[in-house]
Image (cartoon, rainbow, N blue to C red; front, side):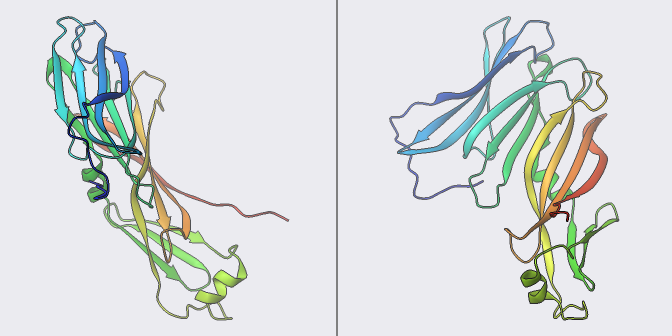
Length: 244
């Protein structure tokens, strides 16, 4: 969880609602109110102690669920059916505020008034392992070690100063270079099949020698399968260059 030691919570500051949505998340056909509360920090948009709360539309009972990563910026909540049971689930997104553009995401079900975690961004980030390896002749291998998939990015369209720092005149590497794939920086609900059930599309930045040296993005789509989200498709998207 991203925490900045320079931010301090005023003990007298009560939690306030930072995001909300309405929809039937319990499965009784009556709209419920889903909201996130948090505590402001002095002179900053940084929010701490972000908590999921669900107010049952039939009984008025409120259930609160603390989040493991509960501090950041711009918390959002989206309601949609991700499992295909006809009941809306709860997608939570929080911007970490770090320089890498990393996001925190959770999906909860509250079917039958029982909150259940369906998706945890940390579990996702740990589930897929990657290698990013520069090769001779202006190529970069991006390897999904987990699923044994390899993508090849052609970087010959990068500016000459960049390439000359890395390659000899004959296109061979001056020295071995490895990049990396960042954790989730975006997770979007998309109904690919137009059947009322949402899938997920996640974005992870592929970086070269440093974080800002972006080579493209891993795009991973996930779909619900019985009791978990499984890989549906995975692609690599790259940046284009000016065409003459």
